[in-house]
Length: 166
Ligand code: GTP
Ligand code: MG
Image 1 (spheres, rainbow, N blue to C red):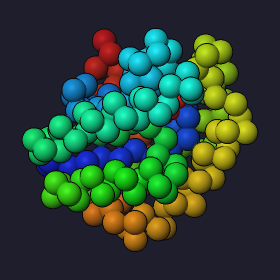
Image 2 (image 1 turned 90 degrees about the horizontal axis):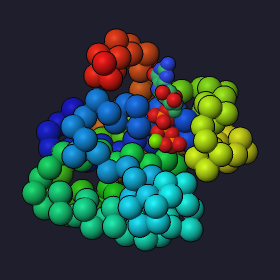
Image 3 (image 1 turned 135 degrees about the vertical axis):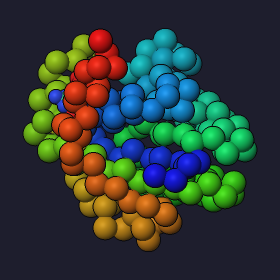
Image 4 (image 1 turned 45 degrees about the vertical axis):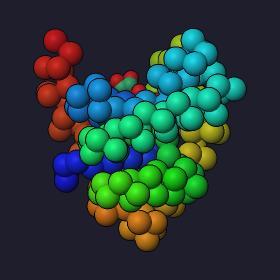
């Protein structure tokens, strides 16, 4: 991956974005859930999304200005959301990397059951996110991403992640 880069993770809830993002330095990761929690005390408060996005974009601008590698940890399943991120990176001359999480939808849905009620995303929503993410894949280069990665070998990271959490 280029450095600096704007890394945009794309995947449904439960696809493992935050787990993968944990392989970067924590200060490099902008997690939308964390910004929701910062503005509302609840990571799952969807009413707080607009304020959380605004706060996250402010931090992203500050980091791009400094040419700092940044990982965007949110579903990024909507084209308009990705377009805003690509534009921001372009303005600062920072290359963009799209990472599509290759986790099967069945696993994304099952993983919701292990979550606390406030954090569990309804199965229909997870399926819609997964469909949108998968449909976006062939068009990601056309959207302006400089690099496109299909992350389907994440289980190989497990020994590494295990060491990090020990
Ligand atoms: P949202 O924040 O809801 O969008 O989900 P997310 O994409 O950030 O998923 P997250 O990283 O929270 O992963 C969901 C669950 O799957 C967690 O309990 C992780 O521990 C687990 N998980 C994620 N990636 C892997 C993996 O590669 N292997 C295994 N065994 N578990 C994983
Ligand atoms: Mg997450």
